[in-house]
Length: 411
Ligand SMILES: Nc1ncnc2c1ncn2[C@@H]1O[C@H](COP(=O)(O)OP(=O)(O)OP(=O)(O)O)[C@@H](O)[C@H]1O
Ligand SMILES: [Mg+2]
Image (cartoon, rainbow, N blue to C red; front, side, top):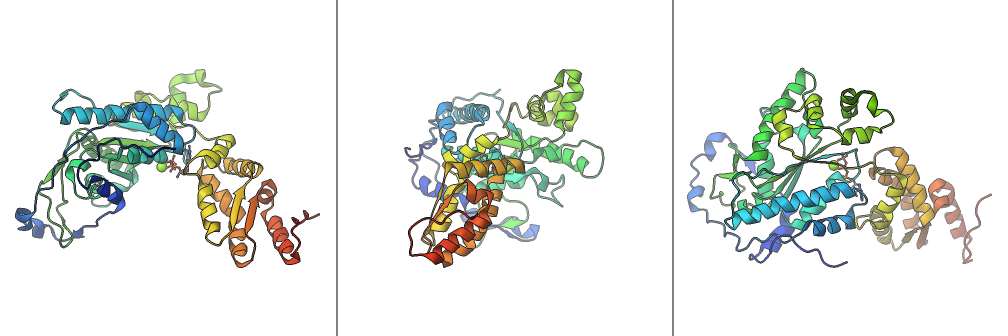
């Protein structure tokens, strides 16, 4: 597999270094509001060098191919995302080159789908490829006023931190908001009302808003100059929101009546229309700002097998590494993987079930083997179905050494 090609031209001095540091989040100090006003540091801070070049070079197929390396299935979501991302970043490039489109409508994305099927994984992988700063948050952590929960504008300031203070880069980042279905104000009541308020706050950001670079209560950490500019515009920040939308099937069923007999829940959710989202509890203005909609599908046992076997981010690498740390080579046989996939599918938590099953199966091996002289572990179907017995056999066989023969299966 070739090296990852970056969407943006990295010829600006130091830009690749900055990108690697994207994960470092600088926590600001919080001080009373008055102290941050008219800060003398404002006057001495040096302007950040503008990026010399900004060339988004990717085509939808490039993004899809990259996503294929890490995410199994979800072809429709990959395609829709690839197109939306390319449209967005090509638009950003053209605008920066002077070709403005005053009536351009931003392609914010709504991603539906059950838990653990790759929604976050898709967005994170795409953001890495494109090389733009990326923040992820749960919509539930925000409140209408920002007093109890967070203020939605913090998302944009997080993006600035991810971009190491470079407003230019932050202004074309990606904001990913999970659990968006939880801020639907379905019933007039306690926090649902707040949910509608959060929607209202978000929709301003999603389109075009100026966000103060610093919240009124913060000053930069010592030694960090204050930003030269006071606000950042969100016009070129792409918003991707996602949620499982449990209960949406009832809304769709009600609208379509008996015509839905025999259609699966996930299929019904995938067919939700704008009207259904409004019925579900979204403000028309909010859902209207999410024109690109696509759903991720549930993963079957066979898909989960491929997640382990074929994905470059397979959790098997993590187990191999953990055992290798003690000089133990672990290998997984196809029948073992099939068995893990079957058990994981029954968990109904998508690919997250794989970790649950692997932990359950391998935890005693992880505890015992490092203190023995056993150097090899083959995970096959019998290990996965009866890990306790398999471990006992392995340990017994070890004591009986020096014979090289594999221990006979227990009666
Ligand atoms: N389709 C997939 N292909 C490869 N790996 C996957 C896939 N789906 C999930 N995974 C793995 O499972 C983990 C959890 O997936 P992810 O965080 O993308 O779930 P999600 O769809 O965002 O779920 P949630 O709605 O609970 O946030 C990922 O880190 C990834 O390793
Ligand atoms: Mg997620």
